Length: 92
Image (cartoon, rainbow, N blue to C red; front, side, top):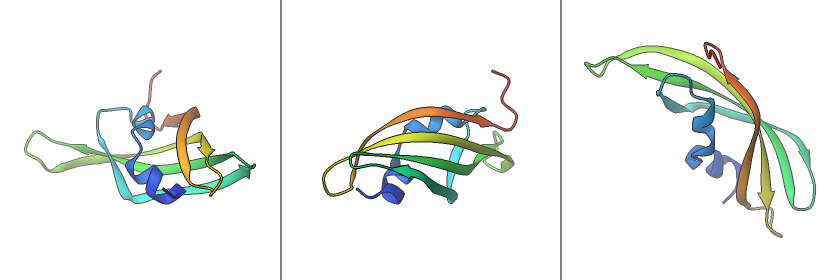
């Protein structure tokens, strides 16, 4: 799975959500910071979408973080490790 596909399906990014919202894949983007033979480090940004009980969008929280990706010999992502990150309104 390439980096874009992996990030759009990764549960690792939920660590960046602050209010049990969901990740808006339309706003998900990443920047490759470094890449070696079997790993890459990426900065990731996305909006966390917050919902009201009625199902309407209550708001959006910008989130960002850094992940270390483990790559196979073909450059496909095999695993990831959360390095650092924050949601804009996060208290912890």
